[in-house]
Image 1 (spheres, rainbow, N blue to C red):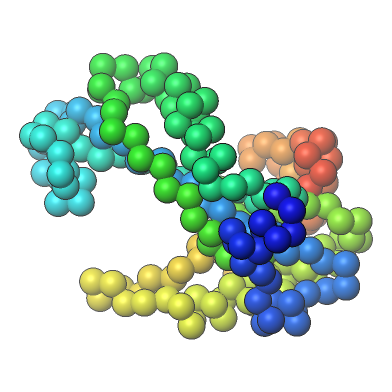
Image 2 (image 1 turned 90 degrees about the vertical axis):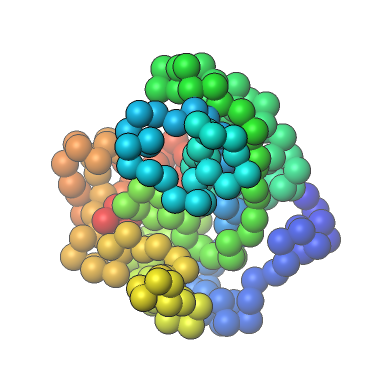
Length: 212
């Protein structure tokens, strides 16, 4: 996408974020990809009694299932391109997985949406960003600022749901800086190093990671 297409599709960096960026820091559009599909219920599902959201608009014996992930690219892709890739390549792989054997997956729906512009993207108990040549000290300062921004955003944009306060952006424990660490080889079970992570896996992808 060229600059005009990017702006038309995903907007631009907010003034608040722009003013908080360090010199040399880069923000990217973070895209949430949410595939959803229907499948046969298991005996456990029937015994548990699924809520309305699990079975809405489906025939008896079927339920909805789904997953999600985040995409943060230097060269952001159009939503239609992402959706087509999920519908063709990703979905074909799902249909062959042993865990879904005999469950008759169908009714695939793919939702692609902008979460926000940011510097760091979330994965399972970790955040990562593109390596722009920062020192370890600057990477940690960048992440500290990101966590503070996200905490403020959760205060402003969170909401009460069924009597519980629901935050919009999940930090997965990154609020506690003593949890920040790297890994020797990219494996969560391979020990810990001082943050940020610059293991061979990160270097191959040209990223830096902070696990927590």
